[in-house]
Amino acid sequence: MKFFLDTANLAEIKEVAGWGILDGVTTNPSLVSKENTPFEKLIREICAICPGPVSVECVSTGSDEIIKEARRLAGLAPNIAVKIPIGLEGLKATRVLSREGIQVNTTLIFSPSQALLAAKAGSRFVSPFIGRLDDISQEGMEIVEQILVIFDQYGFDTEVIVASIRHPRHVVDAALLGAHIATIPYSVIAKLISHPLTDRGVEKFLKDWGKVKI
Ligand code: E4P
Image (cartoon, rainbow, N blue to C red; front, side, top):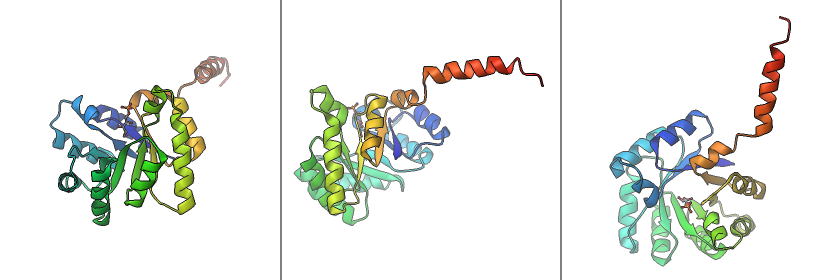
């Protein structure tokens, strides 16, 4: 399973890249708006640190404008994936861009039918937002399961990025379903490693080691 970091914060990306488990980064306009660095400079810096794809979102709404914007964004670094919200205009743009070899991450996916259309249009990634579905009392992980079945059934090589992750259980459930990628906020990725019994165990071993005759 690949781990992407869901952030535009350089310090967080550098930190997790240093742990040796970073496979990619996803940004969105809300995440970028929290940073003080000019947009293109920020994206270039993220791309230089990150070993894998960096998703950057198009904000245009018509297909011609999305195509132009996506080409410009893709030119910023070789590891850019352009994020395009699902919709008819986005779908038309995805078909053109994917034929040009530009990686598209279709975002704001809330149903399996949206994911199926994105895959047919040539998307490299689809991003179902599970936390936002959980927020409105729908079981977000159900659509991940259905998308994976559909992609497997027809041999699509589009990868599923489980997005809008709120807690470690979401990551574990995504892994149990065999999702290709989880994009995880820093606060959640940091929680994946800790367990109070591990801390207590290390403390006890160190204490007992002090009694060992060397
Ligand atoms: C994914 O690509 C999105 O950036 C992100 O996961 C959205 O998460 P949120 O619902 O916490 O804003």
